[in-house]
Length: 106
Image (cartoon, rainbow, N blue to C red; front, side, top):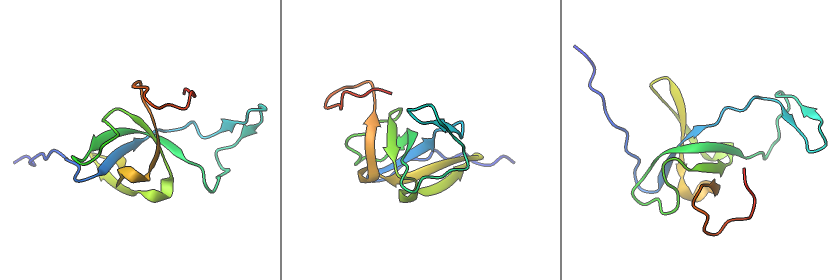
């Protein structure tokens, strides 16, 4: 007998995010290589929105969002880790729908 499959629907203002895997090491603007083992205390991360609740007003599925890694909960679905947080805990959205942008592009 096979297991029943359930579709995950986010509630209220919750957002589900798939964290982007970074290569680990980074380069500073001066060209200095920063190894993956160096952690910065207040470094924000980018991720892709995979699901939104009915009360989320700004973000849509497919948007890239900026968030702090300590502001979320982790859930594993089909062997993949996703983050769940409130929409208000997101810091920025990178999308193709420019409305009130900063003039900066990824």
